[in-house]
Length: 561
Image (cartoon, rainbow, N blue to C red; front, side, top):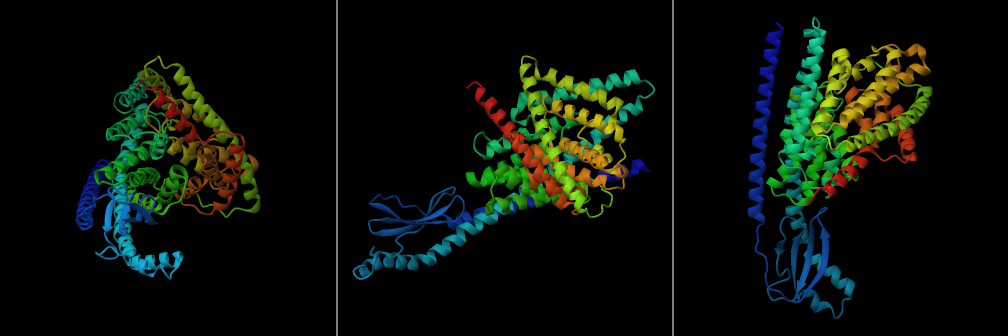
């Protein structure tokens, strides 16, 4: 019966994948037709005669494009600049004779009145140009972002399914070889070491930008400090992330999803001839789509784009982010379903005392978050000291350690989603939680320094949940069971610890709310994230992705040539 069920699931997944691919192809054809139609409509000849020039007025259409009224030898022309090509909208605005009607009135009209009359005469042309260029440009950007998001959802959906199968395989090995523990443990350790080493080899040989989470590279590409990743990153990030996380390294799936989504969206922008500003918007939107697909959290993906990647609210970026996250979720849920990632017991509305305690929890999260950043950067510095060793050797050592852990404690290895769920359920032994916390704390930093693809969010959420549950149990010993409000502190701890490390409170709050399908804890999360961010900032510990970005740029500058 189980085999039949699995067979049906595989057939159903393939059907969903085929439908998603067909929809993507249809959307791409629609966008291509739309683009060609409007290009024919907007293609006009440019003037080539040079005379006495002057700019009369400029009008902003969007972030990059402007309408400019240029006067040449007493004749005014309406030109659009800032797009893929500068276009002349209309020449000789006021007539073929070259005489400006306003000039006839300048004897009795003042300069301001004459300018106002000139603008009044030009207003119909300006409105028409704004309708033609701003409208279709924004519509095509929105459509392209949705297509990029759908493609990201397709890739990340397959990635999540592959990771689930790898986790099942890793967990099954101790069961298969329980009668021969020495041989079984050796096979698991050797297999994990080999997988981690091969993952590092893929990064070294084919795409160095694929190392780590890739979010720091995405931020540098958005700011123009590093070139965007080429297409080869997609298979490298997919295969490398699958090998590393599947081997048991404490890394998150969101890192590969974010960078794969960003790369795919940017490539689509280039293929369809978008300008540099729109390509940057698509790059950021694709990254948000990857986060949304990784955690089944569309709003968090959009918030991540605006709060962490771009760090400003602009209409075009917001539309692209929402479109990409929406498209990613529609396709990704064909594989993962609509249910949230974590199931949380019914939590009562928090009391005033709980809200005040969450302020204290945020202080603890801020201290631990700053410490986590230092340990992570310290692990990377140690890895740099052993740069004379091949990266495969360093990755194999970490992989072997993760494989040994997977043999003796299978639930503690890997990204940690099951560990987070057990913490939220309260099924982990309370006395063992501090030990598990410290073990994952160190394993997460060592795994990130191994030189393989993998993210930080999922390991951070594990630590935040454990920290919060311990805090709740400490201040209310009678509430340490699975159905008590200690689980509420675990949920709040996830958002607070993520805020302390990443310094993105809105993303943390929205992400945890969507992942747990619980909105009753918004006020406690707000209090905890406030104090966590205040403490981490006061300690002058930079946000982790800012520090990783500086490290990435420093390594890039040291490259020969």
